[in-house]
Image (cartoon, rainbow, N blue to C red):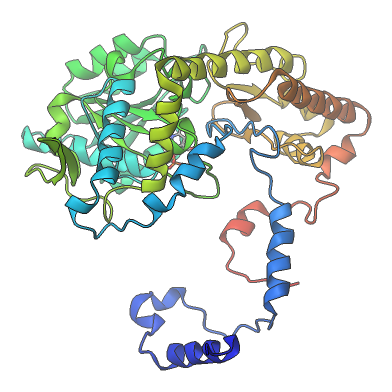
Length: 475
Ligand SMILES: Cc1ncc(COP(=O)(O)O)c(C=O)c1O
């Protein structure tokens, strides 16, 4: 007869007590709690109810529009979730012999090929596990390329002032120095600034296209010419690839290295730090530097290969496999025409929303149309004492996720909206209605906006402290 649960549990507890695992052997003592925490003893039912209650407080794409600019929070089809959760895949193990994981390797191999085709790159690695990790991996490849050419002195990376924070952070991690250049008043790279700053110590120019202002870089071909003429490489931050799907390819624009954010463009639920996948694509002349292992197909069999000039491993095993599975089936389901429709619809939706939102906020770029997202400024409400943060918090009261705020840094009181292609005219209309209601409140009762959110379990948090503080609070 099996032992009652409580007996099994106590045995397990004994084991944990006896085992020689000592946290201080593995974790820097500075990060260990010194004092005993008075944790409550709670029954399993109560715990289940507690977390169920908390889960109801969460807002996700399945609840409603999630216009968080630069994040592409689109609807994730449930069929790809189902496939990724299938035991056929979840019960495989990365330690299996290569001959026993041919199906998984085939999925990865074909995903690499499809991503290469979509982007105009020659080779792709699926290893990096986030966009930022892709940036870092891409920079390692760029470093290695320059070193192999005997130009290891190239350590400068130029980035525009609209760049995402991960760009300079990845440069630092890769031991490189960032040089920031200005964007002009029309939202394009200032070519004079670029020419002034690029020299024979420049390793790369890192660019997001469309930019975080939501504009396609008008001078991209000229930029590629300038960068290449100085012996530097052009890096593509693929976070905003969504509107280009089926329409335009980074490889054709002159980019040499890029990362994809599979969790954004290829529909994987993400947020709060995961789960992500940031494959890196490169042109033919950089393929040898890709991290290993790389998958090759020889006589109909899939093999794992290591290249002598590779930058090495950038993660354990091969990739964030469930995300790769979702990407693979998402691309297969949509096909060439479906992908193009994604790109086009994301652009239509963003321009439709921009047109409506221009009656509420100031748009600093005149009549310029956008691609998949746009940035407006809430500075027109400053005379009422209202800031972008206040409007964002008030949107929560209306049951809508706020847009990205205060980014990019070059737009005062920035609010960046990205509706994505999966929202209907009605749901975009609902977002506009909410923003119009908030505008009326700012006119008539600004206090309610200033002190929002009104009906949440917690009000205004010290946002920085909420993220950084180690304090454990039990209520
Ligand atoms: C423009 C841009 N670049 C890079 C990243 C980093 O991607 P990840 O969050 O996957 O590391 C983001 C993330 O939002 C982004 O918006």
